Structure formats: C-alpha cells, structure tokens
Length: 129
Image 1 (cartoon, helix red, strand yellow):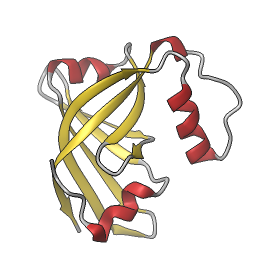
Image 2 (cartoon, helix red, strand yellow):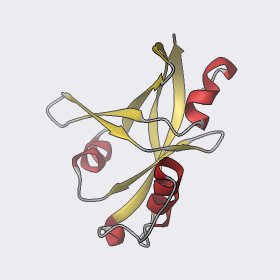
Image 3 (cartoon, helix red, strand yellow):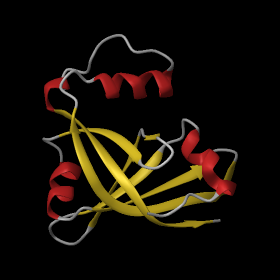
Image 4 (cartoon, one colour):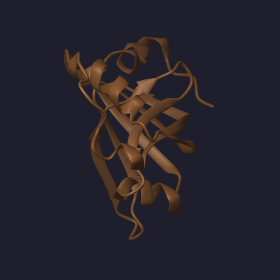
C-alpha cells in the first residue's frame, strides 16, 4: 500500500473532486468526476451496481484518481490503486454523508439507494506536482 505524501494529503482530506479513471472492456479509459472520502488509508466512493464504472471494475479492478488543488491548478495528486472492497449501502447512508460533505446538507436518501455500494480503493502508488 502506498503512503500519501504529507505535502499533498490535504487534497484528499478536503472536499475536493476526484477524477476517477477505470478501464473499459474495450481498453479505453473511462474518467468521471466523483465525490470521495479518504479514511486515512483508503479512498471511498459512492456508486451503484448498475453503472459503467462498477462494471469496469468487475472486469479490471485497476483505478486511478487525480485531485487538483482548487487554489493552484498546477498542483495535483494522482493515486493509482485497485478496488479492494465493495460494501453494500442499501440505505444510501454513505451517499448522504458525502452529500453533506460536499454541499452542506442532505435531505433524503438517493432514489437509487437500493443499488448503492461503497467502492473502496487501496492506494498502490502516487505522483504529485
């Protein structure tokens, strides 16, 4: 497991957006902005079992995130790793936790709560600028 450099740890600890890349079955990379939570060791995302990223990770657990410093667009942290765990979240509680983190409020569970999971990424390597 990779250690997150202290110099860039704040990018994972703040409510920043991560661009998550997964590998599609055709070999092309699929990248989308995502909410996340860094627990000090792993990076956690909310997702559903019905979307492309979930299917991509079933075929190939490799994943990479890039987080850009909102105060300096040339400073970033890239974390490369693998999907290490999928945790069922049928109430959407983790989605609501992230919604509060990013928007300050959460009124109700998402409509797709029954399909919600938490994707856990274990870091293997990092790069910074």
